[in-house]
Length: 99
Ligand SMILES: O=C(O)C(=O)C[C@]1(C(=O)O)C=C[C@@H](O)C=C1
Image (cartoon, rainbow, N blue to C red; front, side, top):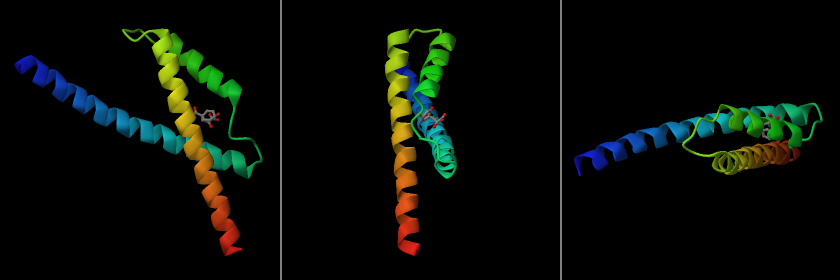
């Protein structure tokens, strides 16, 4: 089972990077969300989300197919957006309590 263990170790290492990168991405989405709130823009931007997914499909070389990439990135964006909205709401609630 030498190979399986080696490949699993590689998968574990990749998962660590994915977790780090997903959180880095979410942090940026939060930053954008806070900024949008400050300038009065809605956090949800359908057009930008459409472009992110189109770009991901364009750079994808497989073996994951386009349908898989769309599913994965729709969920990544949804969770980034949800986290940004949560943060903005928490900031606002905090501002209310200190006012
Ligand atoms: O690019 C933005 O405007 C973001 O807020 C980031 C992001 C994303 O996760 O890619 C999240 C929410 C928006 O609906 C669009 C895109």
